[in-house]
Length: 323
Figure 1 (cartoon, one colour):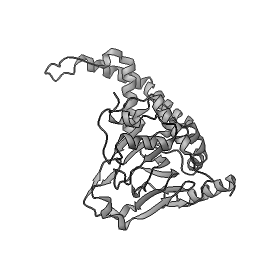
Figure 2 (cartoon, helix red, strand yellow):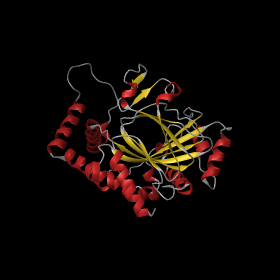
Figure 3 (cartoon, rainbow, N blue to C red):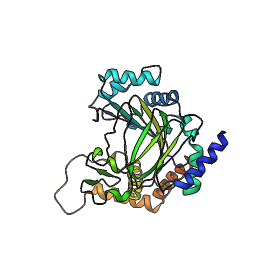
Figure 4 (cartoon, helix red, strand yellow):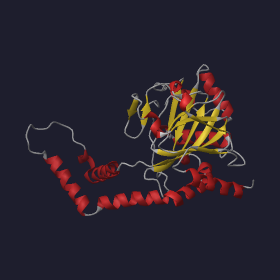
């Protein structure tokens, strides 16, 4: 198939399954969406930019302790395969995995290669209320530590290396399951994956294929032997309006109040509000009356449109495990 025919097939596939059912399009691409070399370049870029908040490791199904992950996951090898082998060696051969969020910040190639899918989904469904989020999962794990869960996002997955195996269940499957834990933004089944594996639909994809499951489907990853890697594009439906406005108000107040945005000391035991809080409330009223808050939120909205639904790039901090 020519690339143009592939694109037509991809769009027909997405139109038929989006928000309806899990599915796989075999041979969606003539080659993997992202090569191992391109994924490894993104990992190196993440490291160089200090984007450690976007790197989430798990070693033998556990989160690493402080400082451990930075030593183990530093990309010092020449190739992706050698990198995975190096991680395994540094861990003594135990299974490992890592996920990258906001992959688009570290790989312009990924961003360009999913542009057609993003444009199609935007035309069909609009910009996600949350955001588009690029990601990657790689490692030697045979099962992710997340077990069975839901996410507030429809997920597209492209294998880069090895076989990707996802088990999915419809929304109603766990309606009477007592071990479901509601985490607000998503739900988790506390029971083991193996106890529900027989009732799952199994999605299996190879490099060149395109896998999709809707947001209302339960899912769990179960890997195959050897090193494997995927890249993903998630369409997040969830947005906290209170959080969006609250963070904007906080940032605006801090900018206007300067050092007075923080108070150090003690309060008198009285029903009267302290003067420093009254002053801050006065500033808040000014910010609202002068449309400063409105303008700030408008700028956020404009940035969302300019970024095609992806989160605007901001500085990232160090993770809990980075000294």
